[in-house]
Image (cartoon, rainbow, N blue to C red):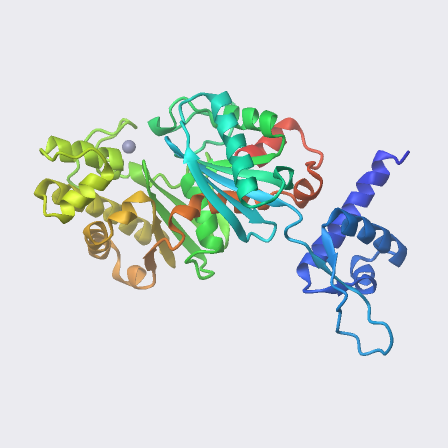
Length: 410
Ligand SMILES: [Zn+2]
């Protein structure tokens, strides 16, 4: 029987080999042995196992050699050996995508889901969605080896105190508890983070970001939240709650916020707040779409409320520009769908309050990924977990606490 240390060494070598192959367009076994500093026989054994498992593929067309005779067989990485799922959960919907190991989008779907239905029900909904999308993509569900889940609002890092949701939108959902239930039910590598952080990962990897040093993603969802990506790294801040743009007070706003302060952007610029203010001003509206369509039809109360909300978000973004001078700001979330009626006063407020030079050096745009940003970012975050998790389904030696910190809460 092979010893644990032998297996461990073999896995380490396999990971090194996979990593080298992934970095090359195509590579022969001989080149691989040189690159990995391993004996040709060791490389050959491991490559045979990886070929059998489907992690690598032989191309049979390695063409770089000029020698006569039989050309060496080329090896390439198989990105569809396994997949990662990304999900975005809000109070009523669960959006799902699957990506291959290179982060290419394979399939997307959405289903109804109740955020407040309890952990077991949530875990069942997640499992069902996983099966459904695997069926849609014609892949076995066991091939989905990792899951990223985007949740409403900020997710506090575990500390001595019990983590708690920072917004009423997450209600009684404790991220740590949800992660534990999902882990038990799905038996996969799982990572949780907030909607805005997952969006930022997607936007900075595949969306509008053009390799800028500092990118800010502002999400106008159930709360106004932002994420900062610096040199490709997401900044969580000391508590994991960096980017609470919605709790910045805006000028002239005297509404009470759930955080205990007065005048926060969230008190006017969230769909719930917009509805409430429009209703107070006499508009007959039941949801955000009504507010937008009524404003477009010329309803004064709806139009004024949207302008006020846009101006307050614009003020917040201008403050961020003045402090951080980012190269790019990407605005996403349901409110972006209000288009001109919201975006015109938003841009106007940014121009009014931002320092001219910083504003001129900052590209402000709306998300190109739109509704896909969160689930796609969640899948990409799942893919960024240790390669050994994706290939072997086992994390390296970590204590449960370290594991939870690393995989559970970003
Ligand atoms: Zn507040």
